[in-house]
Length: 295
Ligand code: HMG
Ligand code: MG
Image (cartoon, rainbow, N blue to C red; front, side):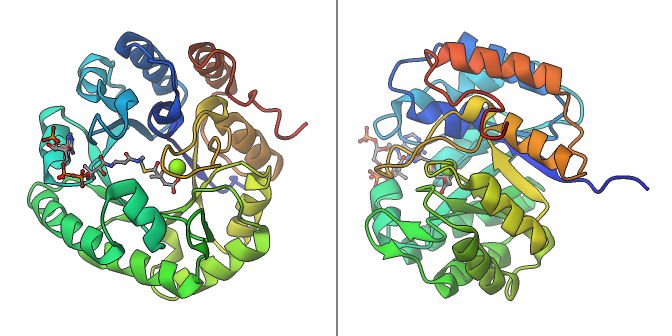
């Protein structure tokens, strides 16, 4: 019998690198994306059209999209917080874009300077414009179990924001454990609430690995039907507006874990290892070591 497929959405060049204090050259980012393009991903998040004053590391995003070798069948994604970001992403020929909101007010204000309600209103024209040109839009919900400012997040609030983004036209909702403090139990409570409002086939898990529980949280999500997970090559990253957050779960660790569970990811582990080595080099060895989260 053919193994069931689980997709890893690579977010390292965006979520991973955005938090790096040292300036990483556009050519180096391009080299990383080009290695990732050969590894078998269908979607790679490579850019972020946000204010360079808020996230200086992402300032070269248009150059990254202009310089990469676009592999057939791979969609290159960019974050877009507002219409300005949307226009820039279109100019740079992003294949898909993502709006990013929060289930908690504290993080929403700190990250995008808007209340949750204001952010949804800000996204609405962007989704309408994208619909006109059939541009896929992904929706992120941050702080799905815990917020660095507001404490535990009620699962109903996550379901409400996910539902609003889905109703607006986001094709997939990525649920972010921004702080990396979720547990399998808190993830399961959150997913049960969200599943009531958004089909589970349209959900993705986006788990940071601050407390070393991301793989356990992926297991809890798999058992509730989630089949897409975001991860960053080399375990790069964090979020500049979530104090205490650290890297995304490492792609290599997730891929190895899924393979052990009998799922197919379609990823080439040797090529992934090459990308991981470059990611670590670019970040001065600070990224989590590939594949070490599990034996
Ligand atoms: P603001 O200050 O409220 O916005 O920021 P504004 O409209 O008043 O504009 C202020 C300045 O930013 C102006 O420039 C604008 O032109 C400029 P000035 O006149 O002062 O020189 N500006 C822009 N520049 C470039 N691109 C744009 C843009 N928009 C305005 N798109 C804003 C609001 C949303 C812009 C700001 O808060 C921002 O850029 N925030 C981004 C924060 C961010 O990128 N965080 C990390 C990504 S989210 C994440 O990592 C979580 C995730 O991984 C999931 C998870 O883990 O939970 C997705
Ligand atoms: Mg993140």
